[in-house]
Structures are given as C-alpha cells and as structure tokens.
Length: 405
Ligand SMILES: *[C@@H]1O[C@H](CO)[C@@H](O)[C@H](O)[C@H]1NC(C)=O
Ligand SMILES: *[C@@H]1O[C@H](CO)[C@@H](O)[C@H](O)[C@H]1NC(C)=O
Ligand SMILES: *[C@@H]1O[C@H](CO)[C@@H](O)[C@H](O)[C@H]1NC(C)=O
Ligand SMILES: *[C@@H]1O[C@H](CO)[C@@H](O)[C@H](O)[C@H]1NC(C)=O
Image 1 (spheres, rainbow, N blue to C red):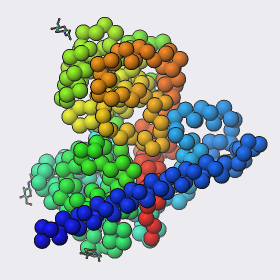
Image 2 (image 1 turned 90 degrees about the vertical axis):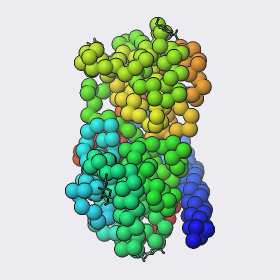
Image 3 (image 1 turned 135 degrees about the vertical axis):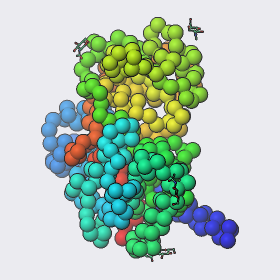
C-alpha cells in the first residue's frame, strides 16, 4: 500500500517535470518565433498596431526598460484579454471558506483581491467547456480567519479537492495541470500538504515562493504580497527628497536580518533600525522613511516574502532584495534588475559599498523605472488593465499552454 502510494507520487512528479519542460519549450518557442517574425527595420510598428507600439519609437525604448521583452508581453497580453477564460468551481459555501474573499485589507490582501477580481472580471466563464483553466476557490486566509486548526485545514482542503475530482471530469483529463489555486497566507503551504498531487500538478499562485516549500518555478506563480490599503500616496519624481542612502526597520526574525542589524545599526549613512518603528514614534513615521530613502533593504524574514517589497515599490524607494533562492513576483515578465538591486545574502557585509558604488545616473534610471512598474503591483476593484490582477492572469495565461483539451 505504502509502496504503491509512493509510486504514484513519483509518477505525478515525473509528469510534473515533463510539464515544466513542456512549458519551458513552449515559452522559448513563442519567444523565438515572435523575435524572428518581427518585420525588419523599414516599418516595425505596422504589424503591432494593437497596443503600446503604435506610437513613437521613443516609447518603445522606454518600455524596454522594465520588461524582458515588451513586444512579447504586449502581444500576449492582448491575446490574453481577448481569449482567456477561467472556470470557477461553484462548490463550497461562500460563508465558510470558499468563493469570496475574507477581506481586502491587511498583509494578505492579495489573496482577497484575487478572489474578488476573478469574479468581476471578463475572464470568468460559467461554461467549463470554454475554460482554459479551472480555479479551485478555497481561501486559506478565510480558514485562518475562522480559527481553523492546521490539521483541520489540511483535511478541509483534501476533502474539498477530492470532492471536485470525483464529481467533475475536468481534473482527471490533465491530472490537474490546468487547475490552479491562490493563497497569500503562508498557512497555504500547510493547508495543501495533505494532497501532494494538488501541489505537484496544479498551478500554485502563492505569496511564499521559496523552494523549501515546494515552489516550482515556471509551473507556479509568485504572487506579490501587498499590504492594503497603502497609508500614503505613491512616491515618484521626488529624488531631491531622497537623502538617506538605505533604510530598513523590522523584526530580526531571520539570520540575515540579525546580521544586517548587527553590521549596520550604528551607521551614519544607512538608516537601519534594530527594531520595528513603533507607532509611539509618531504618525506614519515608518512609511515616511521610505519617501526619504534612495534604497530600501528587503531581507528575507521568517518567510522570504514580505509586504516590504511592494511598499518600497509604492513609495518609490528602490528595493534591495537581499535573499538567496527567491522567485520575485512576475520575474518572467519584468526585468527586476531594471528597477531593483538584487543581491545575495552574503553581500550584506559589503552593503554600503555596493549601494554607494551605484552611479547617480543609474540610481535615477532605476527610480524612473520603479515608478513605471508601480501599476503592476496595485490591486483594484474592479480590476484595471496592467494591475496586479492582470499580471497574475498573464502569468496564468502563459502557463495554460502546457495542456489543452
Ligand atoms: C477540527 O475539526 C473537528 C472535527 O470536525 C472539530 O470538532 C474541531 O472543533 C475542529 N477544530 C478546529 C480548531 O477547527
Ligand atoms: C478521477 O480519477 C479518480 C482516481 O482514479 C477517481 O477516483 C475519480 O472517480 C475520477 N473522477 C471521475 C469524475 O471520474
Ligand atoms: C519633499 O519633501 C517636502 C517636505 O516633506 C514636501 O513638502 C515635498 O512635497 C516633497 N517633494 C516631493 C517632490 O515629493
Ligand atoms: C552600536 O551602538 C550601541 C550603543 O552605543 C553599541 O552597544 C553597539 O555595540 C554598537 N554596534 C555596533 C555594530 O557597533
């Protein structure tokens, strides 16, 4: 019994790897074919009349700043908007853990917004035969909100998904490869571990994209963690106010944070606080520091993900990612090196030297790109083009190419 369970697990993971390979191949073919089918110099805009490329070459160049390939993104985005359909399983009482968001505020708001947005978007279809992907609408954030124990969460998810598998024909057609679930709360990792085939086969959109919790790049999606609502308006075009080289304040709940604080807490150029800034220090003191700083340090905490990255983007402070093995949100679309500084944890010892060695012109370019990227990390209801919801949908759209029925 044990052996056969293990064998079927291995089978699933083999299938998972094959799928990953298939996605990779498809993505590279799509990329290459678009690249080589671009008409040559004389009138490059003509065939791309559907969006951002109708205007000046200048805008084209500007867009090159933040995307790996603005052309591919633009074409695929338009196609996605026209065609992409998602079926939401209707099972599950919205008053318990299913279908609707728990809330649209707090640090897990990304999960709530997705649940809200998918229902009010053009992507929803009520006809499963039209669907490219199937959404499993169980909310870990809601389970957490109702005080469900970890053990019970695992059982609830398992029963729910197994119920869908036995009731509908859709899962078995692809062993779940065209199914996805969304969870920003880190309990999602715990809640889904009772059903390995869910984690291995379907697409996970999660706020905790580190490899030690089973995140599979190219299959899964790194959902940005965005603390909502923002306390202050977005920053931008305010370089003259950014007089502090680097800023971090937070809990020392990981090794890298302890080292960061120990090395730099008394530095006169880096504003590194040994602890969280307490409310007693004044109204929104923490947020205002983002406005005054050039670079905001984003070290991994007990979980690698944190709302600090999205805060930095919102307030116009260039995020300095200080982490090993972490998939940044939308990193298959956005070129993070164009608006962030991505470092290894061991770079913490040279942090000040690294930041000081960035020439002013490069800092300005990073800052300007950061402002352009802000809309991709904003949630709205109803959703609007190019916002965080659409970026997640775009990532899902890329992944649906794996299997089609
Ligand atoms: C867990 O589930 C059991 C059985 O349904 C129930 O009696 C118990 O109250 C639940 N505990 C929590 C904390 O949800
Ligand atoms: C899907 O496959 C599982 C495992 O073989 C089976 O138990 C289930 O009944 C199937 N679902 C449907 C709808 O046939
Ligand atoms: C710079 O800071 C000052 C003082 O806080 C503020 O009044 C001003 O609006 C800021 N400038 C910009 C461009 O944000
Ligand atoms: C920072 O200053 C405090 C208080 O003077 C001192 O106890 C601490 O050792 C200093 N840290 C470093 C890294 O120099």
